[in-house]
Length: 241
Image (cartoon, rainbow, N blue to C red; front, side, top):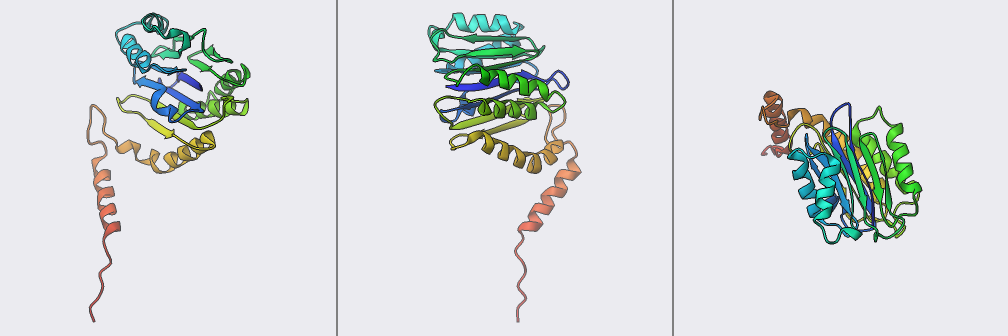
């Protein structure tokens, strides 16, 4: 029902998942990430616990392949599941149940997995992989978006289009990027538009965000912005006559 990419950037150690589907709010159910641990895409009659438990197993020290084996062996519905994993060291693992609706499968490379089911064909995941590899110089979030765009261009979900999502984690426990298009006639271009708004309106303020070590970085700048917001909301004074 979905095509996704799960990946790690070797340059920044960021982890991310991008997904699109002819299903409502794929970005709410497919990605499971933890900074410094790993990233998982769980899809096809999705079992969220494959992502939830898989992340826990990786954090306990299991590599991606072993974590995947553990969660799949414990799921009686494994024949209709699909999962892709990358861990903090860039090791990958992928699984496609034998009863997933065709075309269903995956392509893996250095630090990434492209996977999908009910696709127009294998060319979808191949195009995603090619786009991801060709954009190596870009930040992970841009590379993931390009992979989604390439997958859609190659045919995408053969039922149609409805939702898309992008999530990336860096050093902090909260996401660096968490954007979704839950119900749209053309969700990937809309996700690209929303990402452009994020770059313009959110990225400039990331340096002021709290970290685990420092809850008030560049605090003078925060207070200055606070005062500017209040001033901008002040009603103009009307002079009495």
